[in-house]
Amino acid sequence: MKISANQADRFVQNPGGGIDAVLLYGPDNGLVRERAQILARAIVDDLADPFLVTEISPGDLRDDRALLADEAAALSMIGGRRVVRLRDATDSMSEAVKNMLDGRELAALAIVEAGDLSARSRLRKLFEEAPRAAAIACYADDAQALERVIHDTLGKYNLAVSDDALIYLRNNLGGDRMISRTELEKLASYCQGETSVSLEAAAACVGDSATMTLEDICFASASGDQMALLRALGRGFDEGMEPIRILRSVARHYMRLQFAAGAVTNGSSVEAAVKSMRPPVFFKQQDRFRAQLRRWSASALASAVESLMSAELDCKTTGIPAEATCERALMRLAARVSRGNG
Image 1 (cartoon, rainbow, N blue to C red):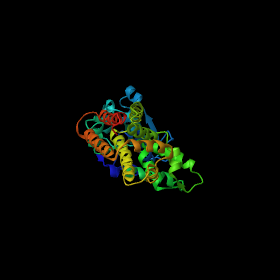
Image 2: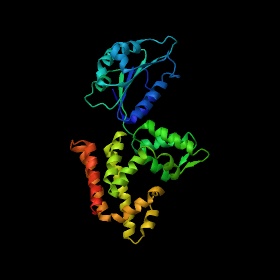
Image 3: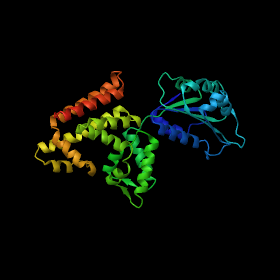
Image 4: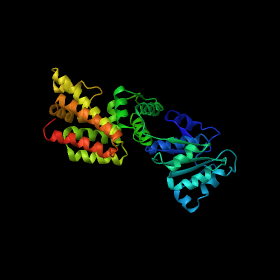
């Protein structure tokens, strides 16, 4: 059966006795790993206990196709239910999984971890159709889910989060759940002795992963630096960033410029307009933001936002590879600036 996104977290905490096997798959590898850990701990207290947890590799299955079924059917020697984990699963292992699910109740809970699988995937179909199995998709956190991760992780250290810091973290984490938690743990350590996380602390700590990559993309595009933009985009795609997420982040950057440009049109100085921004422009980027504000007109910024929204729609509807659509849209904006048409 399929487990919906809004049921997934509750399910992995308590899968119930009617489930023998669970497939966790999707582009967010960190979330796959996190949910696998939670699911395993719902069955076994000590995941390092070799009598209760058996790890199977893809190489093990190549040598013995019956191994997965045999291990999942084996009773615990010390009582209690066992867990069998198969990582890095692919459709090439469908035969071994089918043999495991083929009409038998399993003594252990089998947890299968995979990457992104298409709707035609044989593995997905096996888990979705088997009566005692479940399939859970693990996609990058949306804003609401990411806020919960931020509050939950920092809350364990009795740390509140300022509004500006929350917006910064929400905009710059989320591509991988495990990386997000690692970054937040690092931030909590940095803020030891404090009661709240400030924007400055968040920017100082969460600045060497998705955060800075997205900022580099945004500022390279609006500055017309095409070589820097290509490098930052390549880094972002290598890190697994979704093109739509990149387009939305860049659109937000242009909207912030548009808001500041409106203030200038109404009589504010560039300096005052930048200082009025909420959340504030990170101090290390203020000079670049001011330069972009002087270069772009309000009407050109509005046109840029429209083109980014159109590119997002193209990603969803045209069938053209989304990475290519994203790159083309951002390069066009960067070229427009370099030609002096901002």
